[in-house]
Length: 569
Image 1 (cartoon, one colour):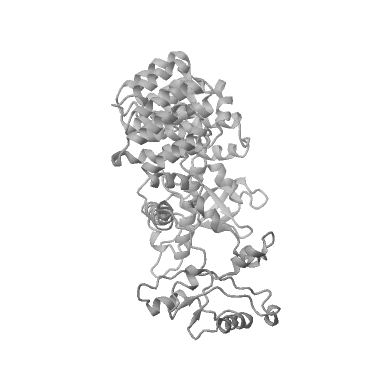
Image 2: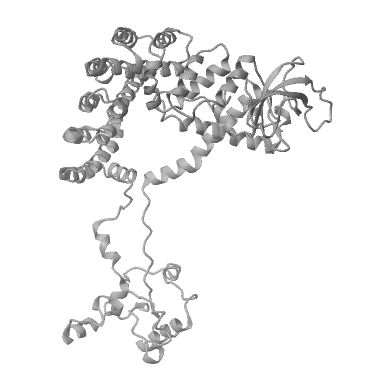
């Protein structure tokens, strides 16, 4: 096996071509590799425990205009110093798998070929952008591989009939077909695998599971399939593997446990609970893998009553180091019977195990019982930061106090209030100056007053440009910093002439030689961002791009250096 990057970007290959990659090729290659990684992650929801290695041959063929079998008829000349392009070899089409309207057998074309192959060697070549087809790097092909490609076009797009074709190529001597067969199952719907039950080769699956040479990811697939087609007599073998304590025997543990539960049923939950969930001596990773199998059966298995699985998961709450991992599951399954226990765990927790607090608060936020709100208020007194973070993570970003509702009142209502519904005496009292602000410091050179209404002659000009003012209380017991005062006063450079006239009228109406400052209403304070929000922003902006960059660099380096046997193809 080798990389076949040319299937995605024609004209590039490993490893001697790396120095000839241009900046454009480099960027395109990076995008394609990232697409392949995302595509691999996107199919994880199909087979519950399988990870697809990359795009299948069928996916690649669908993205190409032409797929042919071709024979090498003339090797490329050696590259000379100063050549700007790679020399190309000549090929003759012998068979057309896709694009029969664009090419035909007997046509010749040129493409970059990496490696020294004898004239007459067969390849599978893909191309895009007709009529001037841009050919990808050819992939060496045997007669069996070419027959495999020919069969792909005839298969249904999905379903058990399609999977039945690929299962015969598990661990095939042709690595290309073995990888492709696995990828097809990894991306297949679990329902299609169930439909294949009667045609699954049970004995072959057991042999592959026992084979130490079988890769872990493929072993997960075989366990998943055995959980569908297995028999009761297979249970002792699975129990022996789970209890062996051998890493070789427990490879793909999550699929092994799921397979065991599928065949043993509800009676098998006790062993899983005692061995992996409630066992303090069980390693953290093994507990989490077993929990993944339980989650699968709680959502898709339909073999074991969900309530029995919930009871098993509850036992994890007694283990300090892993209890926080199951609280979200219990909330998702709407198990509110553990609310009192979780609250007590919160009370007993300290700085050494404070990580359990946020999941508990999130659980209480999800709980519909009225008592949950009372507990939230109680726990907020113990650790308000945990409550704030849990509230943020739950999607509720309102951190304001109840008193903030008063600030939401429209100040224009006070300004435009004509005193309707009040007696004349009340109106007169309301119009009197506030002794707290106007008479407290009579000798002060700096007085804050509320702006009176503009004269009638100016009312029409400023009708639509009303400026709202509030009376500010200033402690004059300390010396005022002129710079601070100047910074506190909002200048009126952007105000209209009508507002300037109104301000002048205010100064005139006071009849005082002391400077008069009209203080406009300050802007509403910005809502403080919780610390967790700042941390999330830092994570998204700094760390995630950095990790993606490192990942792309490693993948590109491995493609060009030929260190690994397979990445994309």
